[in-house]
Image 1: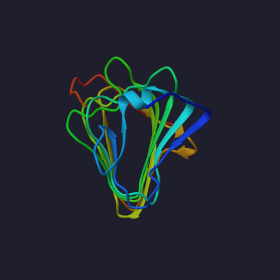
Image 2 (image 1 turned 45 degrees about the horizontal axis):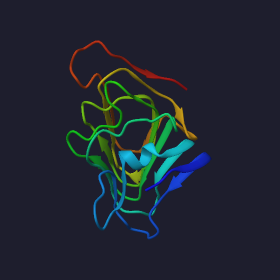
Image 3 (image 1 turned 60 degrees about the vertical axis):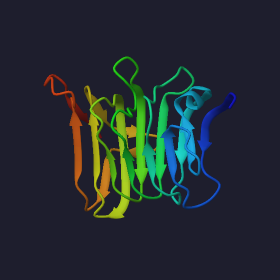
Image 4 (image 1 turned 135 degrees about the horizontal axis):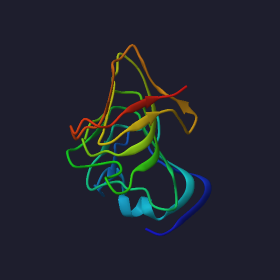
Length: 173
């Protein structure tokens, strides 16, 4: 642990192909990044993962955006999921820009996720993309990925996962 001053982009990835990734909790045998470790990075964009890694799981406490960065890109070489209560952003501190990219299905449906702008892509044929946010959010361009896309897979985006019924989803070109 320490401070990373990367300037424009901080690229954090496992050395070996096929390595599974945990974001939020330090887990032996996995490439792991905790929220505290992400808080020690200063860069406009933080990229975690690689296209030939294994699965990526958001596991553990909230992943909040510190003052040091405003864009988080998560990349998986397989499926991307999150465990219950493992939020990206929270009610107090949303993540400004989030891009989710993978070769398997992407399913981040914790009702307390909170982002401002979302983009993403899954490249495997028939793989789905599903994201739930507690508040309003926009689908736009983040880190060079425009919108949300799949290859003949379902896209399920939910604004207002808390069920209050007052939030909107905005899609821009």
